[in-house]
Amino acid sequence: MRVTGGVVLSVTAKPGAEEMYNWDLQNQIVAFVDSLRPMAGYYHDMYYGSLYAFADQQSHLLTLLGFPPVP
Image (cartoon, rainbow, N blue to C red; front, top):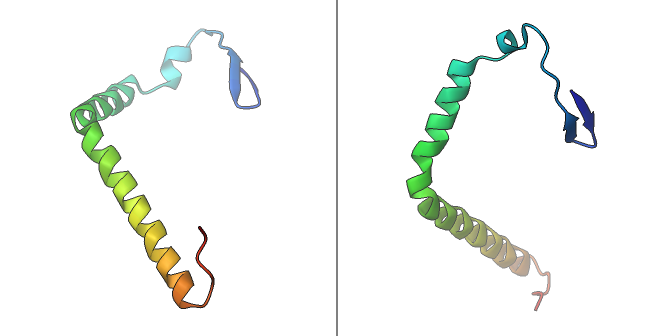
């Protein structure tokens, strides 16, 4: 495998390469990710709601400490 700047350029199969990976674990990870897909919208909204609440809280804290609000 050749990697340049985080991009895989080529992957060559070598004898015994299938022994390098735990396919059962890979399949379990895929099944777990697939189980989250129906709730993706909920998780998206929860993540952004938490992110905006955190940013708003920090903005209020900085204003209380005397920093001017940014328009």
